[in-house]
Amino acid sequence: MRHFLVFGTHPALSLAEYQALKGGKTRSAVCGNASVTDDPDWDGAVLMNILGGTVKLGDIVGASSVNKISAEEVADMLAERLGDQPLDFGWTAFGGSPAERKKLDRLALPFKKELKSRGIASRWVTGKGGDEISPAAVAKLKMTTEGLDVCLFVEGNKVWVGFTTDVQDADAWSLRDYGRPGRSGRAGMLPPKLARIMVNLASIREGDTVADPFCGSGTILMEAALATKAKTIIGSDNEAKQIADTDKNDAWLLRERILRPDDGERFKTFLADARELSKHLPPKSVDRIVTEGYLGPPLTGKETVDVLKKNAEYITKLWTDSLRDWRSVLKPKAKIVGIWPGFLTEHGHVFVNLENQLEELGYELENSKTPLIYKRPDQHVSRRIVILNFA
Image (tube, rainbow, N blue to C red):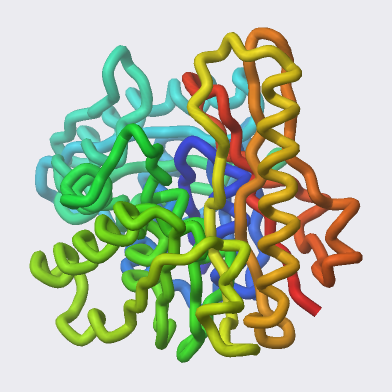
């Protein structure tokens, strides 16, 4: 059986996360901001709890062609899910051209009429202004259990038909973002979903030691503890307040039972400059480093290119010195997932890029051909997620 994933605001990054988690064992067809996959080890509930960039996923029940698909055919494919009770249903098309998606969207009303002809009362639910129904609405209306969220995916001339089985728990993500006690908007916050994506890109194995040398308030440590079986999770920062916030958040996770009581034994935090990690950790003791790093001072959007270049030069040197120091604490074939920022203002764009220095430092950029960018429309800083392999 094939399955599907619907991604959030950064589809390419989310697909890379899923593929990293699966270790290249799946074949995926990209359909707009979604993907159809032939994953042989699929467990939707488990995946939904682990993935940060996927907002809903489900099962594929059949396929047709863009030109021939009909509401009756879709109803036949979904017959085992229909039953005879009244139901709410959502209807969303992904991929293809705007004209193809519009054609498929027009099948929603005929589908409702087809259900009526089969003795099934239904209500077609859309998002605000007729937009596609959100994962939160799918959950609220219990469409994964008592209703039906129909999803159609265009791949070439083919249309895959499926239904949603699991959606992202928006409340849980929001709680870990806004509910934790150690949180500072002034210092800047790494979104928990992006932290989770980075953790998954690192391919952390059971028993690994994971470190974040720019841990801030501990977002990456939190997500690593929730999503992996790492034995030791280390956080360090050069600001005492950040370490205090990390410890406070770790205690909150345990107190709220978001983590198990014995998870507390996995955490280790200390005050340290990221460029001097080797003074605090034994040689060859770290399997994975996952870190956002320093993104520079807050921007207003009016900074000159010269100012942006100075910011980039500082961060480039910070990364260069850190990568050089980390070589002694990394195990052979260790992996680093980090962020190189880009600065975007009305006067120009400047990006941090260490690609030309990596070979001399002893690293290889794994995703050089497929840059992974995270950027929100209202921000002046973009994040390029890099995956570095240590020799």
